Amino acid sequence: MELHDLSASHRGAGILRLRMLFLVDFDGTVAPTDTVDALLERFADPEWRRLEERWVRGEISSRQCMAA
Image 1 (tube, rainbow, N blue to C red):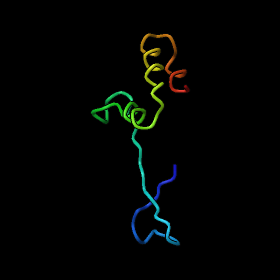
Image 2 (image 1 turned 90 degrees about the vertical axis):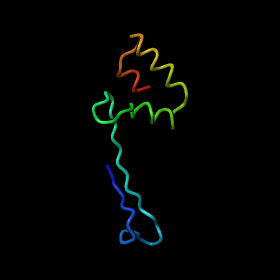
Image 3 (image 1 turned 30 degrees about the horizontal axis):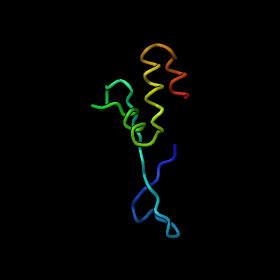
């Protein structure tokens, strides 16, 4: 994983370097909301909901769901 720093001392040749950290909490132990669902809501094709419904019904495994 590559982290980038926002501070001015870490800017090189006019390029702003960003520092990001993603915590993905799938079972509610760290975050009050499901962070995977939040990322999917924001960035994924709406088809992800149908896949999750299939997973909830037991039609596909969690591995198949996440891979799709």
